[in-house]
Image 1 (cartoon, rainbow, N blue to C red):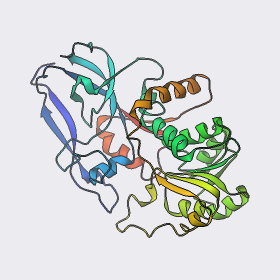
Image 2: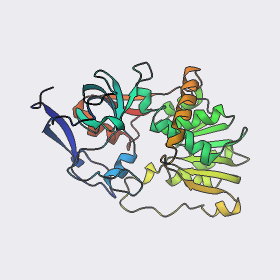
Image 3: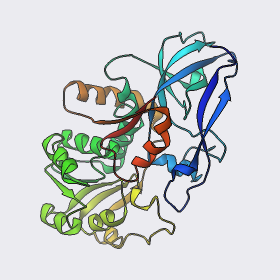
Image 4: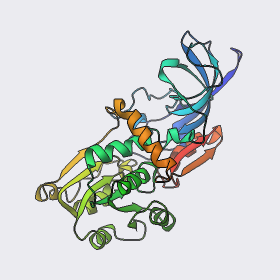
Length: 335
């Protein structure tokens, strides 16, 4: 690759704090490709991962990745092929995963990328074997602490994290109920992922359905949504319940934050716990978790779905899909 080559990028053009993301929050840009420094590799991006937390990064919310300022290349993890290398341990042609961001070519420190096997699970490293699956695994096992026979309710259950939580909870012997939007997603949860039941929040009353489906209460509630789903679940928690707060997609586009959960004092009455969760801090255990999840996938105990969009020009609109419920499964884009 010549040093005069052009690198197409998408820059952050706005801060969406307190409002919905808009296409105008991103701006197309072209930059010259710079020479590699010692220890770096040049990666041609092939697949990008999209997560709701990227909006939090743009808003500079504490706890998320820093550096997402207006004028910066939009951050993202992805997979690509090494086309130049000045790192002794990484060969040209290797498939790697790292912080490639929203651009065609990324120049990365070789120590920050992970060399991947180029096999049938390549893109799964951005989903069930990546941050998505690890979030589900550690959030459920370390905070939810499910026991065989527990009733486990998952909001956003057809999403990338939620669908993994559903299946891991089922594998561990839980009776799982998923909350999702639309009959197609609910049917997938029951017919393919093994939920005992699914609640369509678009057409049903969540609180009433939880009363019907959880007569003995909810032992573990894994929340990716917040809002009505969280309120309804808190009203139905069992004694010593564990409530895992992983996400709050219902509030991501609100200008004014909604009041706290309406039924929060049930935590006291039921002697339950409610705990927030981020993936950071579990890095030393990633290897064990990935091997376990891989074994479940190879055995057919876990299935996953990828929502694959295509084209560099469609990168910003692909992120917006997450906040309108258009995605079905892990949201990816192939450049």
